[in-house]
Image (cartoon, rainbow, N blue to C red; front, side, top):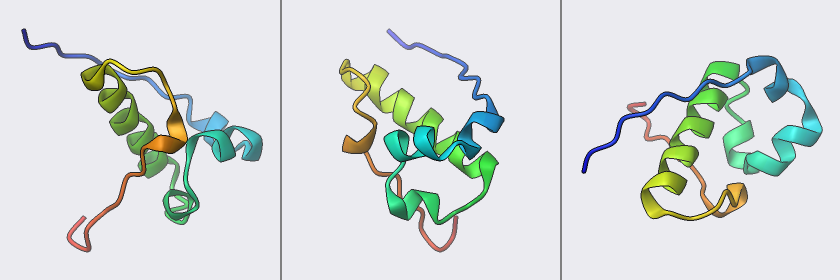
Length: 68
């Protein structure tokens, strides 16, 4: 089975420090770009769904290569 989904992220919420500290590693927060952070949330959610695990946000860290 192949599943496709859409994630909607409320960008304003990413600016809340308390929320961000529960979701992102310090290395992820260095991007300081709301759209990139929203993308990181989408990647993490996709991992949770694919692995069939609950949302333990800090157990997954998204890293970018220099090429993007």
